Amino acid sequence: MLSEADWMKPTFCTEWNAAQLVGHMTGGAISYAERIRAARRGEVVISLDAGTPEEFQAAREEITRKSIAMASKERINWIENSQDDLQAEIERLEPGDLDRGLWHRKGNTKVRTFPAQRLYEVALHGWDLENDPDAPLRTDSLGALVEILESRLPLYFNRSDATGPAGVFRFVTSEPDAAWVMSIAGGEASPLEDLSSSPDAVLSASGSDMVLLCAGRADRVQKIADSSLLIEGDARKAAALMDVLFQPF
Image 1 (cartoon, rainbow, N blue to C red):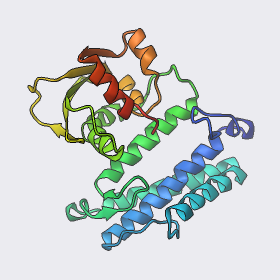
Image 2 (image 1 turned 180 degrees about the horizontal axis):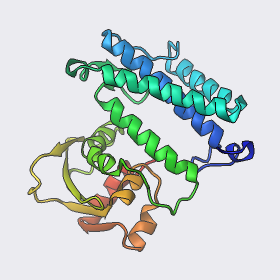
Image 3 (image 1 turned 45 degrees about the vertical axis):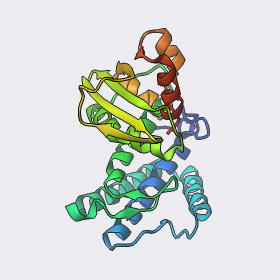
């Protein structure tokens, strides 16, 4: 178990120490569970007793402050209990619940997006706690995280308000080996099932590097320089796409 001094140490999320980051994760679990419970009733709520996005943000910050004041064991129990509650809500979902609406601060979404969103948060914030930007992403869920990128990247592009670049883009990873194609047309991104489509650009990296790059945790300039990230085809379009997708999550 971490000492109190360790809990106060910074993480790769520079605005949070370890205790604050765990508080942030706890607040996420609590609010996700509340929103899923409401969605199963056919309701869309902001959660945390908030009526506005501003009140929601204030409630999240209060949970983070509360986490700082806790003893180590209490802090760990809080996040574990909150995560168990969220997992129970996810397991109660029926197929018909997955397309129910959910509030999200970046734009309302569907219930089906939340389990993947939470998996990303847990994996990436676990990496943040290591506070080593040169470390790979070590997690048993890496294969799932890479697989989720196929649907996640178009979603995040469409939330960005970007209008381009237009074209077809192929993503390739190693360890695990995976490939998928995304099309952008009329300012809208969507996955393509036909992997034989001729891409304007191909972006290749390890699974760990691709996930970290797509979460703004890796330096794309350095990754290109050391050949960890390979770009083939239209470099200008690839750079414009990375400007949109390789942002902090």
